[in-house]
Picture 1 (tube, one colour):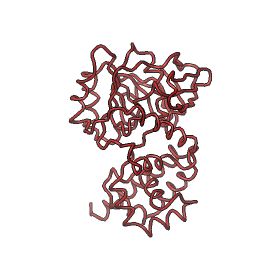
Picture 2: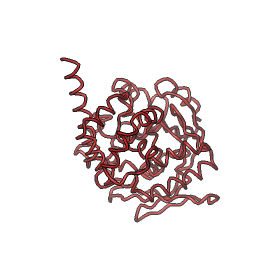
Picture 3: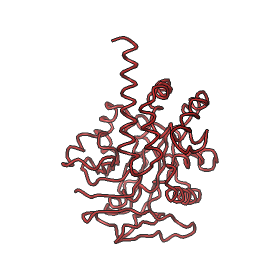
Picture 4: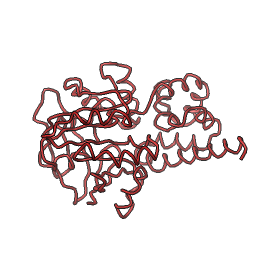
Length: 329
């Protein structure tokens, strides 16, 4: 196959990825991102711009957030395309510098039904922790419709995360007791750095103003509680940090939308080894990340949903941002 054909095939795969993003992730959540993703999928010039970046830097969330950071939020495809083509070099540099460290604390609403039913207290270790907001599930409020929980601490007003659930979902009666917590990340986010916080806020999709308000409230709590964040790679540094977890607590390692960025071989090795240094492994990932776990879920879940699993056992289909939870276990 010639280099030209290779590039055409790569462009076709990237175009398909943007079409999938529009249909499976953005539809019903962000009309603007759905429009932009469909536009990118059909535009060879923008696709070639993306192909000049390393593969992990070509994803829609990174492109759209970087463009908004550099150019402002566009009113539609035409303005977006014009801005990208006029500021290619600056946008390329920004995308190389940034990453999609979406730290969505609302995901705690999906994790809570698992955490609350474990023997207490817990030791929490998050892989891909970003700013550590998901390490604070005991500091937030939750609204499951028929059940509502609030943190007893009110020194900082907590965000309340709404989560629509099905009848099978075990709604927690109490927040977990956490004896130890830490997060591992390649580049931990320093919430004292205004530029890093601004980037986290830009990663929130443009129409989701309530989500942005809750993110800011969670950042205020993290600024008070200062969860421990360790710079490191899950492939090399996880074992060392996991060995610090106290044995008199239920040791939990969890991650959300992280293992998709790790190669299949390393991902499989992680799944084989992680339970050797924790009691409970909670994965909240797209179903294709661990296809063997997804196969055990039986009927495929709704498009664009994550599969929540504990120790390889599928439990529920979860909205990527924690807005809904459909229990299957």
